[in-house]
Length: 216
Image (tube, rainbow, N blue to C red):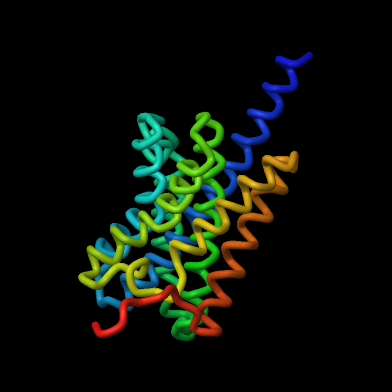
């Protein structure tokens, strides 16, 4: 019975990771495509930015965890979803009004929350200590965006946003605390995702930011 219970728990966690990973992949692929089109890139450029924005963080996470080959390479659904989302965004942009900056911010916050949750859950599944697991969640959330911004020749959002990586870390912290309190992986992931998204959007609305050095 204990073995069966452990197997069910692992299956539950893996399902949460898979669902959050795919949802985050789609959201970041769309957000990456919008950013690429705003940067004046052609179709190939849009597809490349969609790919790296959606899968970059997950690949870095998996390499650091020793989960090789990374899910983004091993599972065909990840690149397929990424390219489909990027192509769909490219095709439909001519038929819809220009995307408002707030919409891009919301998409980015949603992707950040989903990936932060998926990253910390996967790290915990690999028996990584809680603090490092939270760092893995943060890296998963911000990694793809850093690569995207570098390719678009701009300062990465994580270095200039009011609160960005901090929101991912906070969401991962909520997941860890919820899991330690005995909350199921699904509800812990939900709580962490909501916490990350809410903090990021609140930071944008109210202009919250971390302390900066004075005189520079």
